[in-house]
Image (cartoon, rainbow, N blue to C red):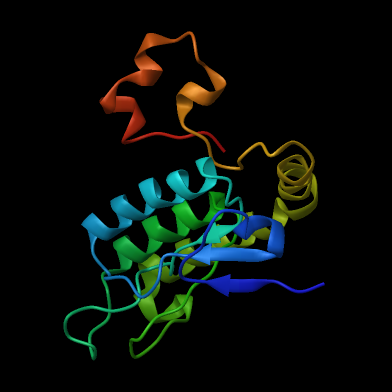
Length: 161
């Protein structure tokens, strides 16, 4: 079996062993927020396997490091994504490069993801394959009768995992 990691897709992409990633994106808060919505949109479109470059791909200054808190929050988002993938054009990508405060916190997120591999992630991925149920879903997917789930305040800031 093989998987293709693609920047773009088409109808039926997911049936052909492709995973979608959002391309080389900026390392900033606005792009992190957009990545959440991009991830949900892809999964609702039937592309169940996706990821973004955790931490973003680059800053305007390609020799700079993104802020540690931004990378931590991106790892926390990535923990819930079908694929957790860190990649970027920056001096360092290892967790400890983000200092004594953020390095251990990022490592904790990676360990948490690994601990969920068999107990939660595998059954969730199996449900995606068997039923087409997205791993990340808008709140209204699980709570269609809750009027608040349909509001922009919820739809743009929360999702199910």
